[in-house]
Image 1 (tube, rainbow, N blue to C red):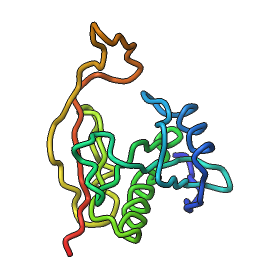
Image 2 (image 1 turned 180 degrees about the vertical axis):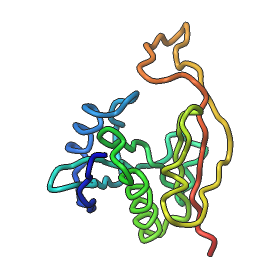
Image 3 (image 1 turned 45 degrees about the vertical axis):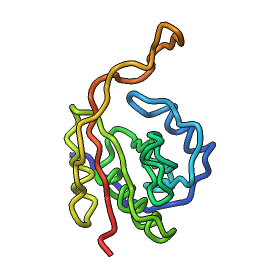
Length: 157
């Protein structure tokens, strides 16, 4: 069994987070923008990043909600994803937001969401899937087109 070094959080700027996502994410490229990004490192090396921004779905962009638009770790480094989700939620609450959402593929377990160490995230819905390609606006899909699951963390106060 491989021994993993302890994890710690560190700040990371958007450009550096995007480079990490483009190099390591299994099925997405970096998003267009962000409100903030957080990195996890082990022994001085970045092993994961979370990028948080306004909700991609415009109907969810109510001024009180942010979205984890990308979360990526190197080879599923143990505990890194849950550490990043927890740090994102703490930061979002400290900034005055009431809700944090994220999507995972329907085939993913959501273990890191449940292991984030705070009240259970709620699965709100199975959503989307499909393609953005349209006859009048052709696009090439560079992301999974399968159904996703929407989760939220919400302040109860």
